Image (cartoon, rainbow, N blue to C red):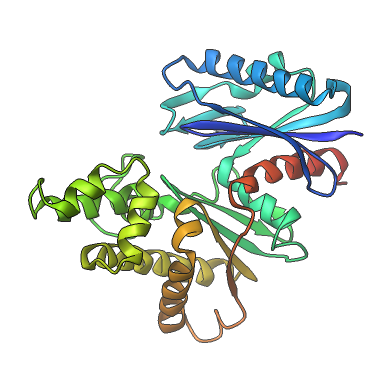
Length: 321
């Protein structure tokens, strides 16, 4: 049997897998991202780990069609480099040529959330849907755009940077260097920081602050505080949902999608609340006739979405005429 290879490079971990034609993840492996190492050593480590997975699965490279690789940040299609990946602190990394020297099969690259959107479109809830917007809420906020069943990346390859739509004039500083980006006000990182600051005002010895600040998982800490009805957490999350809903209204007005798909770590824990509140903002503020037919759903693919998207990327490039 032949497989599509897929690698999802993240700021904390790297997931990789071998995927069948029907979207089954036959084999997979996860490693921690050695972010302290130079980019070349990180990619070499990923290559060696992928080879280890192949040996464990007893699959030779001759049975791998190619590998789709997702990475956070912007990928310059013309120069074939990672222009900017803030979470990895990468700038102008010649990732394609370097990986082509490491892997003996064809390689294709995309932004990680573009791959997540592709995964939903090809193997998830978006199958058969023409026009899709994906939004993935986690440490940052990423997105992807499918138009007429094809991934839209624009002339530079950077289309779909939904998290860097400016939603608040003179808002908080974003990792991209700008102010007021959606990511800076509604990502897990932003929500956690804001709740923590509010709890700190009660005193750093208060039970609320000590419990929240000592949590090893920020997403779970947010969800626990929000689901318990703690007023500060509810206020911050509701504010973030308002920003998300407002962003989606703007995207609906511009792109008129058939479907909006939400995912990411925060969605997986409090997704129902996010969808309900964002949908409420859309119904109240979108122009009549623009949003009534738009489906707003969450994906059940979870962290497998970018892996499946990597397989879809290989399939599209090899077999789509």
